[in-house]
Picture: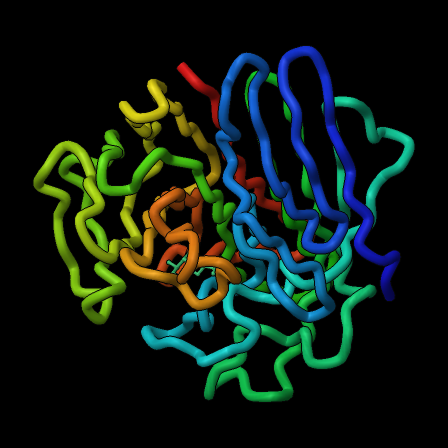
Length: 293
Ligand SMILES: O=P(O)(O)OC[C@H]1O[C@@H](O)[C@H](O)[C@@H](O)[C@@H]1O
């Protein structure tokens, strides 16, 4: 099932954004008056079936990284789940200059997409999760993205999710991320070692890949771009903070352009031990809201 690689432009007097139907992926966003995009896109964006778009706001669903259950990684592919490499259905009637609404249903998936959190206990005979996912994008002087997943079947299921936003920064080494002081985190660069954020601000002097226990608001201070970005969220127990700290394989021009220096990812997440479990009929909304202060 595919309707190609349609790109939607949201343009209004308060801001502009572009969204791809493939992945329901916000590619970029900029409030009016800002010289640079706030949601970052690399210099080359490849749109290809079964290939994840890098940059923008990837939807991580229904597993994070290789997936996680019962205390261990699951080695699942694709990395960060299939939600990012499926063409979502745009609600053409409600689409406007500042709003896009997408849906993805388990009924539309391809063989192999489900079941997803299989484990030794569940095995291959685990019931196939039935879900309906809504994704809403509102782009004005604030960008708000909301992923709502409903269990439409007769059996409970769990899923991981994240709104994996790439923020444009002047130089990753110069920016500071505030709002996580004192928070516990798992350091993914060191086998998910448990740590505590002792400094009130996160700085990026090397590879950073951390899963914080935090539902709080962040402020991304960027003296080079002369701005502070406020990053709020709801329905999210964790904040993932990531920058590779070196050229990154999936960025096409990285070795030439050093693009890894131009972004910081701050993700509203529910993953690993905080995967969401939905009983039949239940739903959960995960939202991130971004504005320049
Ligand atoms: O899939 P992308 O967009 O290249 O991002 C990958 C990164 O995504 C982050 O969410 C993870 O914490 C990192 O471990 C991972 O490397």
